[in-house]
Length: 632
Image 1 (cartoon, helix red, strand yellow):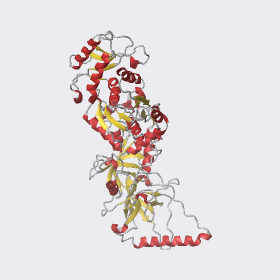
Image 2: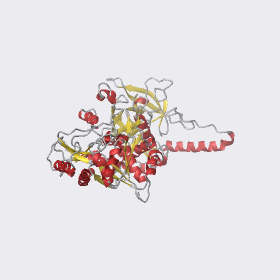
Image 3: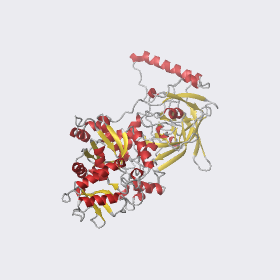
Image 4: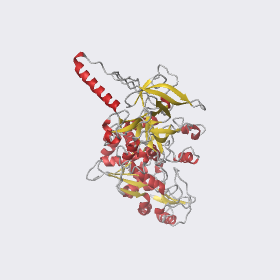
């Protein structure tokens, strides 16, 4: 299926014949219509200057229309139950949550749910959310990931009450670890001890407390190398839950990759040691995480109880997965390194920076998460469902323009050379969004797929001898002949006549209308562009299940480029007034070209790519007007 093939518009309904008792009204309407047509005819060769046309300026809607109540997921179901377990009270004066990403990669679509849940839960209940970087693993942590995470959180419209790092609490975590040893809740394990995950006693488990303290301090001071020593929690190895089998509390990382914030330490706390205690230190009321941490809740609670510190409440919800793609950092790195995609923000990926570059609005992502709701079940969603939510969001929030992806030149032979008429076109279904003018001239460009050399009864667009309407142009055109390129045999020019009726005659009623772009040097029309149409990066719903590996499942047609596309002149106003709607976090348009979004009538939704320059417009296809992913 041609991803850029326009969708046929239905035939315009004919006006109903007036009943006898309405004859006066019908006559008056016809006279008014005739007067308007005559006025256009009188000005046909002398178009009014732009200042006299006075089109209504573009007006973006105040806010997006989400498919559901934007707070629905907090009012019922899992998150409502969580709140009712620990509601606002004298002991819980304010709700406080945290979003704790690990800064070792870019966030993906699954993280949007975690952001929406944690920030949204706090906002809905009048509380606050902390952005805490979980920097307990120095491997892979880079400053660019910190910046990217901050950027995405802001883009989605959320502002943390403050930003913290797990490493900010290392001094306190160290103090609490010594206290845990004194309470016989941890022991130092050195070379020769039983290694992780066992369900029977390690030989060092019965070490004297003072000896474990000494070994722990030796770890801190750099006496041991990676793998030579660790601190383990002294839990309950008889419990069936492996998260109580004396799990690690501190370990010595490989190599010399020490995070700047923790350079005084030669060891690092594990996630299981740091997470619950950081929640306690920061006064988190509701620690909301995905079900992969459900088994860890026992160690989370065990640790806080053992140290007798403030105890947050951890609850787990199902994570969000998108089928038909890969979200694994390792796999995306491989895609980037081997050149299958441009970078982490390639619009075919489902990282959040890739979705942003593609042009997906943050409001559409939040609407998607909210529409799915929150339960404990893992949510595996097809790409088609995500794109349908994006499509519904864009339908009511972005303006419309005429865009031609594969231009075919049409010369209207019976119009004089230099003919030019400014046609008023709305930015939406009607003029609610405002209007603008575009030049209608002797030469226009249509979609190549809107013309056929040989007509057929089931084809309603342009063909020799067939009449079609040009959207918003005064009168239709009829194809009379065509020319072919001698070298390729492809149609290069279509000749047509303008179906302007003679005085006293009725204009032809075409069965369908097609979009177009006029050629006018005076109005810098058309605006040239390159369009990148994105299809699924993979051929199957589960690329990782391919027997030859996920790379063998790559779709060779995941991107189609149209280098000679054309946009009508209303694009300049859209570029100047974007984004529609004015969403929090979208920022300055000049530095965030993904904010410039619009519907290409009959084709798809588009956004300006970050590689665009003042001299070259590059458009990314956000989604098609209809679901083609699901069908394919």
